[in-house]
Length: 228
Image 1 (tube, rainbow, N blue to C red):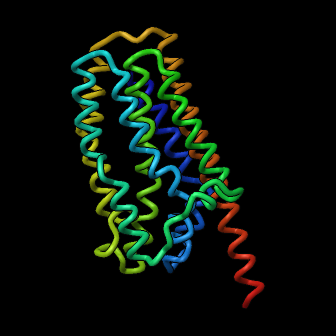
Image 2 (image 1 turned 60 degrees about the vertical axis):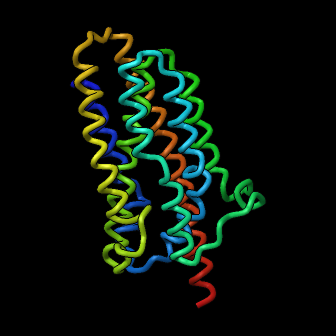
């Protein structure tokens, strides 16, 4: 499984160079975070079902117990998100907006990730899905937390702040337990290949989502420039 660890780290390094994050590092206000919050909403509210149903598919009692602990730790994060929307005075997207053209990127990425829950054929693959989601989250929240801190909002926000990032990093305990389990069994070359493919598809889904966010932020900047 050390091969998988290295593979995920390589994917993280590549994702961290996404143009969206480069843009976020240049920001000095919450304006783009507010816009991102709206576009992210479809995924945030669906995430709870992804990890819940993924755990339900598990058959090994020990793996499921650890996965359940992870599920419990992630429960309620959508409430942090809704709280942040309220704090930033961002209106919750209605159904018409959620299913509008601008949200295609988020919906497509979300559906792709949900499909992995039912595509997985073993508990090892289901664990790989969780680990892939965790690893992408670490990258995203590193950048949002840094921006939120830079503009002095760390104490007011939960989902986009260092508060969430710290919780995500605490999941390393879960990841270590899963790693210990995976290291205790022999993975065939075919199993490793399948796990790498899951990692690839999850990262591809988030790349699609972040590509979309970058396009939409660019459109907003163009409109703002015209108005000024």
